[in-house]
Length: 317
Ligand code: MN
Image (tube, rainbow, N blue to C red):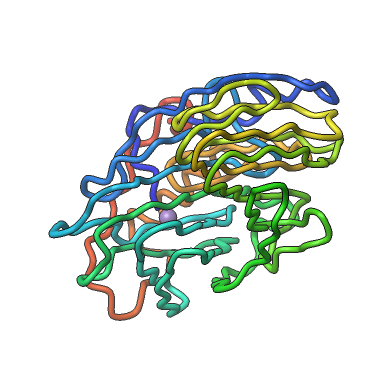
């Protein structure tokens, strides 16, 4: 997806760093944003209270949306640098096309992982004939400095490890847990788990004390470390924990995200992750002038326009 907020905010990763080693309980309200023409999503990261959880630097929750007799998701060609886009499909279908020539329909239970590296262009659209509902999460993962200029790549994961625990069905989206490892190609220590329960369930999940964690409910409600969570709220849990107490009383789905605190300052602007204003300016110029990003083969979608650079990033005249 694409960050279409034009409010002029640059997300700087070091303005609210983790309190190293200490657990926290911080409720973060997501805000609504529009992606594509009219798809309303909830954006939980970045947020003024918390920019990142490990290398996870962007978290959009789309739907569940009724899109029968509608176009559905329409995100035209747009560029990315310095990050991976991680799409987790819960209901519906989305067609991904990119400048490497990859064309991939993603279905429920599957992950699309696009590694932008030094630069890629993609579009994400509901197929003309699509299921009546769309429900998905899209996350971005910042690439560590030593990997941020690698060649772009696209991976589709149709099958992910699923394990059963105390009434929860747990899909290992990224990283590993309880001896199960996701095949997703990642570049820093992190974990992403989808928890689904069809009724009451309660478990204690072992976690890594050197990781920071957060939980976001996508449907239903959950009690996490005694805190009640509803859709639209991200609970930031901090570091230094060895276990998490997870409890639900109704059909519920939530994401548990974690990672080693990302100790590099990043700048996140529009669809770009860089380190300096010059990185962002160069990528924006490359996109606006049509020089520097490859095109999506046979693509007829309307390319997105980069928003005007904020004052904090504009080149010195
Ligand atoms: Mn995108």
